[in-house]
Length: 273
Image (cartoon, rainbow, N blue to C red; front, side, top):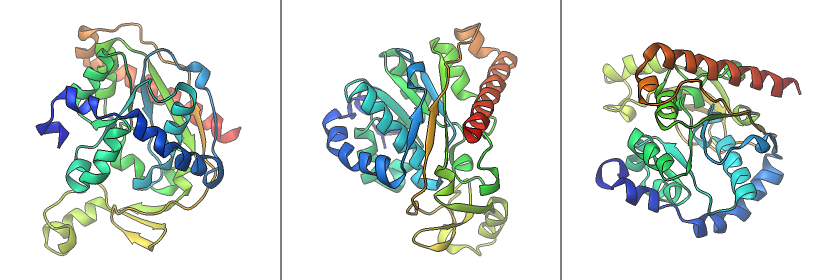
């Protein structure tokens, strides 16, 4: 996978504007008709930023795709945006990972994000990961970045603003009833879940979704149509930046809480609008 066998330069070079252009008509159909997406806030976007989002909607994560459609519509295919994607995807589905890499995905490792920012590109990250994307439906209006502060250290080190991106609606394209990770982990250890024996999926949701009806485990699904609203929020510029600021754990935590607070406030406003 790129995280181990490819150089940073090779991973970044896989982004192919011609592939993106060929996929856009299909994506725009979903944008305009299937999800009836509405967006605003793109006037906030600076020349370069670390975009930070909250994941929604299971493995399909349709709000992510709709966000990228917005980016390509406004800035074209040449202006690079790299998205950090879990390295396990390269192991689990190499074909999908290759297509994602051609659209700008790189492994979620610091060296790839740093290299992209140092080359003038913007970077998109969803710190909450699997726990966020499969959070229960009753928590769909909560920002959950799971206490992960690596993105804060990245922004401080590279002296770039953070631009929060939020959405509502994508977490209604399936209904996550509960995350039974701890129970599934125990059953797995007892050898009672043979189909996941030996792996740790990080989450183990029970959800209602297509085409399964009732699904058990972090398996792919088809999102059902539901309107999605996305919003690009005002940039957050931290008072102190640089390597020393990134090493100050207390300051990093303060910055993290600032980002989460602003994202939750903006999401609450979007829901009420």
